[in-house]
Length: 119
Length: 114
Image (cartoon, rainbow over all chains, first blue to last red; front, side):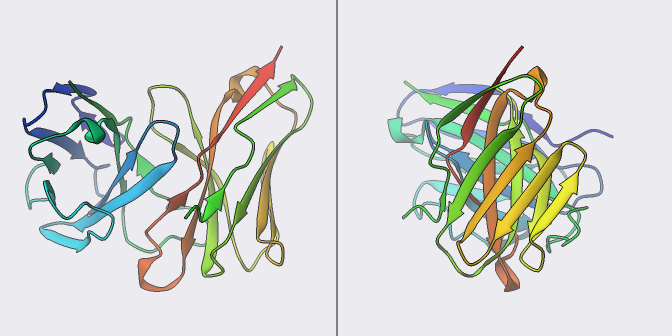
């Protein structure tokens, strides 16, 4: 079984360009979560999506950032007009359903992340 | 406002001994706690979790203890192995409709020396 696949693994952009980060969830998982890890910090929740729906984007900056999870294809995190402060590792996770199982059989499974560097 | 705190940035132990990683939280709404392990250039890997209705959960060499009154949890690894060397993240979620939203600590780098 393939895990969560993220690409590219590394992405370099100049200030003002657009960054597109892709995430293919575990096969059969219909719930996707994006997290951002700034240097020396823990992961911070950005957005939660189901197929074709944004469920919770409370952790996403209001401007320049958007996310989608279309019916077909991977989830995309899009950052427009990137700035130096966007440099971070962006992780995608997936789960088969929303609720965390109390017996821990269904935690969120993470991809290996995309390291975004802004020049 | 750091709701999940891992106050030790690093920990070094000898192979075969016990590793104890600590985590404190401030949000009393948190009712589910997880530990993730992360190697460089990889994503976090789920290790073990505990719900607030329990005070201990074991899985092989890994045991998580939860002290709700102190808002404290710890991960015990025994015996520690060199392959356990990684960054360990404590994470928590609140109940209700937003239980998918994990709040992470900053992590503790564990080094197990042969």
